[in-house]
Length: 292
Image (tube, rainbow, N blue to C red; front, top):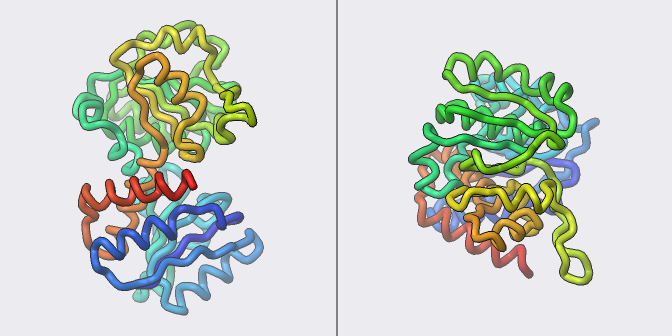
């Protein structure tokens, strides 16, 4: 099985390491390569990789949206999100099929006690970019009753997330978009998710964390039984997660979402479910690799 990931840049991707672990643990022979692909060569590269026998591709930035115009077909999730992160070569159609496993990866990365009670929880989502949209759709499908999206520019966010409004209404999910500056307390929220890249650079040269989207006064209002997720996984301990841990709040790194969305992609290509134990092995290996 020949697999790969396309992006620009792509050298930093953990996907090759992740999928090689899956292949080893599941004893499925194959290869997984990283392909640096510019926007100008996206179409030609997709054609050549498909005809050369590559059966599956992950798509990373900045191609998740641009790739759609070159696909033979897409699933309903891709159509709602306007982005694909998983491509499967369909020889019968001589083209690529698109899927998006980001939302699945997010839900599966959450602690079981959170997943079991999502339909009873109030959620705060920070950011409204592509990752936020995938997480928001997953939360709507999980029938989370109330979701607040906090952003710097509510008008821009409303336009970005407009395609999900009817989905939320049909599911009976109440959601609102507000300005970050209007947040007065985090007390009502059982789950807080940072989908922005803020904090990606980790501590400074003195070991201090100086980049956190929410002020200390707000973090002090977090409920003791809240769970905080940061989709950033480099570093594993972001300023946001560090500040919450200091307040004895349960935290979840974005590395789990990476592992589980990858497992969902791998299952689409191989037809084999990736067991939880293998996902845990991959998580631990990537944690160690990223700390070196």
